Image: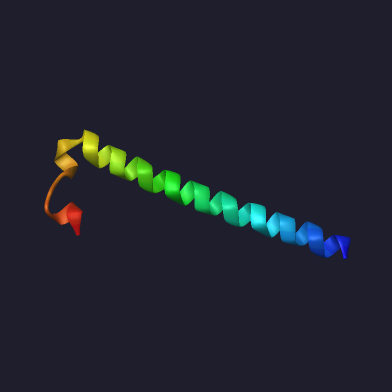
Amino acid sequence: MPDDLAASAIYIILELLIAVFSVLGNVLVCWAVCLNSNLQTITNFF
């Protein structure tokens, strides 16, 4: 039982880290597009 709890905790922590880094990466991309006018093209909106 304790092994299952530890494995579940590690799995949940890894999933949360992936989610946090994914959101952070997307925010950085949006920020880069807002700051750099060369990235604000029609092609980059699709």
